Length: 624
Image (cartoon, rainbow, N blue to C red; front, side):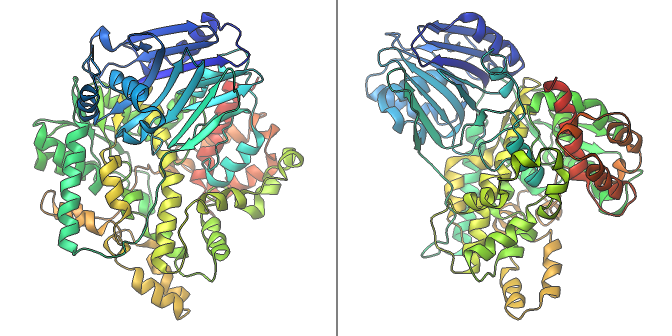
């Protein structure tokens, strides 16, 4: 687990070590155990190392093949590296190290662009071929490891974080207004745009190849999500047994490490299931929970603190348990560092992730997380049920798009973006949204098809945003985060499951829709105990039924209450006093009206307020 950075001069002129060294220094937090730079002709590679597998110098990077034709910088873990190593040894490859980096290098040399599809893990890498003067960039299936790229004339740069690219003098920081509009619609980026003009997110499951002699990038997509109803379904018990087998296998794979592994533990089934299986392999497993001071909370936020349930699970599983309790002031204090490490804001309130990673990093170097369980097994039924009966694909897009306008709806976006509207009025966020949904190639005929399309959409967008946040805020502390739900075999199995094994109320929702009983359907929009039925059944004898049958709750604090209570003065200082930097891009009065609605209790705009706070801090750090 590491950080990578570098650039290629497409005009063939020599690269310089000074620029790439500056890029590496910006992401040193990702790899406190080592650092390396290699400059060769027009290419410059940099690497910072977090040593997890093979702690010796033999696994240092940049890594060369014996003939030194190829050089690799790589960030990630390929969990099936031992199987791949045996296959390569049968082809005559000799290895000098015991880790996965050398396996990745020789796999790419032997199998070329077909190699990434064989990797079961998380990764982003750059490979330079000195003979062909060509560069290959690639990223894992799901986007677990971040990768960005930018091109300015004859120079192409890449990095694990945007701050590495911004450290190169050829890439000055300017806000991307189209990206800003996209973010303030979805609280995420559904395209490859970022908040930094000219910097793009490298798409998951893709490979880019280019060379000095052929500088136009050649793109290959080697994998994509594909949720489909099986043509013939097995029996329920067979599915349950296979899920449990694959889940055990995934956790076992991701426990491989030469340093200690711990686990996040909330009160939910995802982290609870992973912890149960991991604790069986590693008695005395260290676990970590983030809780919240809810003394001032109201409504459903009174139940946001999951410490009691996590402690109960820790008792049952025999883990060595640690926890951190957050108050409103903690959100305020960490904001500058959170924004710095994220590069740009993404989905949700990310400060709990920051504090949980900070806690875990005091005890372990690797932590397991439950990310991906909801997206694979249907953990958000209240979303899917809004769009399961439709007259057409476009009607489906309209329904789901309206729901996913998480921050500012189309009816208000022009008012809020009035200062820059002339520069972004051509952007159609519905088209951005539609492009993601249209990426799936199956027809939409049945309600199950619409659910599967929604699962595809959320895996491509919401899950990707969660993974970006998780990576940045764990690596900020030199901590590697692993996600067993995103094991290749487990994902392939989950995508072929019948929807009926994930959602229990789909038939009733369809019946009520077809009978135009919309008011009765709304009760299912709040259903938090539906979803993930097969996972619940598979785990019911391994963790407590109190957990396997529990309601879905996310890692989110009582922000709505804090923003109009303990943190109200902080909010007012940011947006009602002086000249906030965001008002160069957003309309002052429109923003203040929306914030006031929350402060006065007329609307819950906690997501918007958090995003405004992040953008204000982002402007302070990047816009002079």
